[in-house]
Length: 67
Image (tube, rainbow, N blue to C red; front, side, top):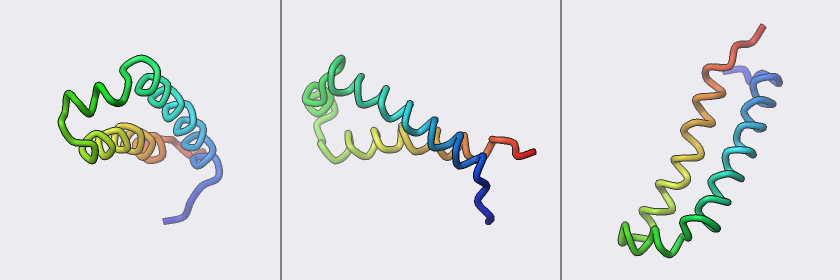
């Protein structure tokens, strides 16, 4: 699989914006400790948060059209 510069640029931009938004929401609005108390497992919350960031990023890479 050959990596394309344009696709990587769009994916990196999406990742930074999406990661920043998720970090802000989790740290400021929802509060991480509240999530851990609700779910009951620190590891499960961490894994799910990483998947919330990584899966859409991979989808952006996959579906970005290269001219």
